[in-house]
Image 1 (cartoon, rainbow, N blue to C red):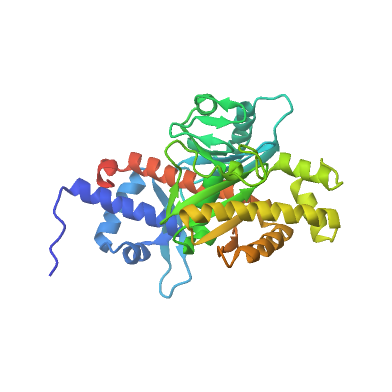
Image 2 (image 1 turned 180 degrees about the vertical axis):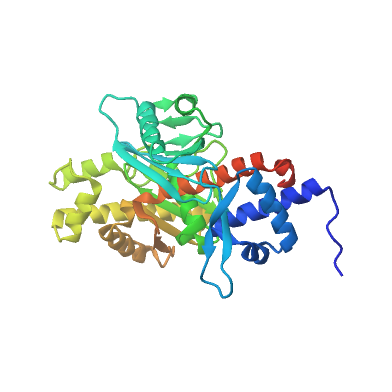
Length: 379
């Protein structure tokens, strides 16, 4: 017979409490019998821990289960006001904010373009504040996905140069909670890794085309950020006949391609690709060149990292772009076979990744506060 786990009762209660909280976060409302089955704990242990969690306002009644046979049993769930986290995706034009609870469910959402002369920190604070008017609960933390190189301490280096952590610190002060800043393409890769196309891949590189071209690199199931956060900055990989340091693909490049092909340079990448899909010869020429450049970027990455596949996201997943990439990849296949797949989340991938990271960090924060010694027990 297996011997019972030795140790202080407070430690056992903490471990059991974390198991129950994690299960409720993952599965939603459950009966006591379901918690016994899911956690492997005894019914007595589940009852004792639930009593402790109820007294701490960590869980609350959530109706009854009428789907199983027998008498209706009461269900419990994480307390609806246990805490909230904000996930933010910032691009060159707008900010998109969602509030999530510890289960990862979206409780409120706002999206708005940046004002022409406004401050982007103030704009994000306003959007988060608008979300908080919709749902009650303390805001525990914020995860922000943003273009540019993000250092380990949350500093941003973009076209304006390094900010020394000014954005992160200002946003944290404006919202009154910790802020984590992450590269937006890395968050898109995390979304694919945890719940998308990348979940079935041991390694992959996500190529996201928006204002610019970036990569999120996953090796053996782990996101690779690089020593200083530069990993994935593929927009400047050398390509003949481009000069060293010239961007390979992005808004500025597409504007030049449009001028060279007699098209309106003010159209977006997707508008050019829409016209290519409709059969416009000049737009098709542009799509062909964009597909060639993106495929060569993938080839350069493949020669160094040899990922299982490349996940195309943003404008890179447009049907006209997919056709152009497939055509050029077929030409390279005898020397360098490349596999391309499409993102599960499209343009929303960075926000999905930010929401997932925010919910995970929120659970760690709230559960550690609720369960004495849980930091120690989880190491």
